[in-house]
Length: 192
Ligand code: ADP
Image (cartoon, rainbow, N blue to C red; front, side):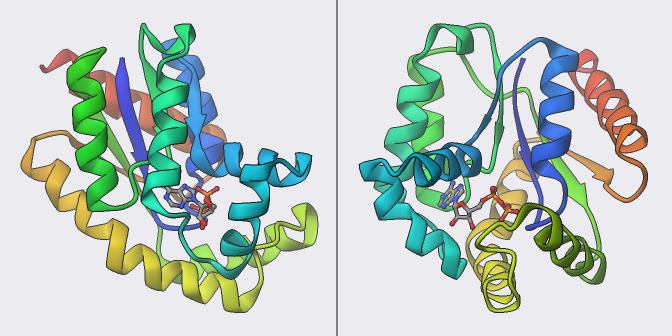
């Protein structure tokens, strides 16, 4: 199973990604989580990406693509994976197509989590009190939405055109949303 989970900031990609990956027995690969872990460990990569992330800006494509290429080459990704937070730009999507052509095969589904903007902002401000993520402050949140609309939202049309898009209502209890996602993905994959 090779799939993507997409959605605006705060939609629950990370939370649902882990659960859905478990459902299919594949690794959940989150570029945001990889970057945050590098920031926490103070690695060279962490120093490069930390400031950008805190401002709500994207990490440069070449940096991000290299990280994903390395991660997909690890043995546990050979039987499938769920990518969370990648691709986020057209060049990243093109790079992923090339990576998949070399190894693995094409994507089978792209899950899009649908949540209204007001709900997203409320969720992130609440998360800020609990997790203290550097990018969960008002300025960075506003910037993340702008960048998402400009750079990432257009990718949904790309995957819709390829017949891969599975749209799921992302509002509700976590396990309820997971069940909805799994049902929609199962139907999609069986229908192919
Ligand atoms: P969210 O989607 O809620 O903003 P993520 O954990 O997916 O959270 O991403 C956090 C930040 O990590 C992004 O705002 C961006 O700075 C960086 N990032 C993650 N994935 C990518 C990517 N594919 N390309 C560029 N930057 C990325």
